[in-house]
Length: 196
Image 1 (cartoon, one colour):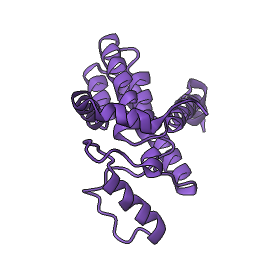
Image 2 (spheres, one colour; image 1 turned 180 degrees about the vertical axis):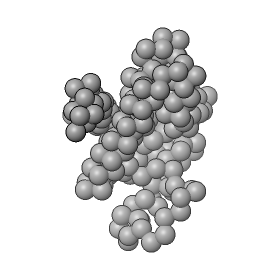
Image 3 (tube, one colour; image 1 turned 60 degrees about the vertical axis):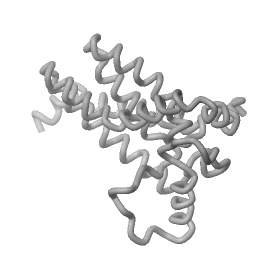
């Protein structure tokens, strides 16, 4: 409906292995950005921002897992499959394993080799939005994270095998989490708890 042709994009990327390796690296590194943001905020002495980021992370994780548990999905790669000769985090073999888990039940889920399961909403998209949002006061880091996350968003449909709508779902979960943190951490709310 949005005019996004995932198989055509994957064919285009498969013909450009150097670009694919950049997207692979950015996708891998993006999983560490909440940790990096916490360290950056800690070095800047922004403990309140760290508290808000951690609360937003907990809320967004709960929302993502809760939604996915009720409506499991594994992204575009589970629907179309990817070209076999392309290096991917979420490749065809891994995705077949996820579909087997859905069909047969989890049994033992290996924590070490699990690379991700949630299609919609994309938690990588959630992390990208949260990282940029909570670093917006630190201009030096914000610009770097913003540029990095532009590339990270491009990598998500490729390396994460996501539908485009999965990214929009992740943005929505991040926005809801940020709004919830603002409500929970508002000064009037803190005053109510102080006098309770």
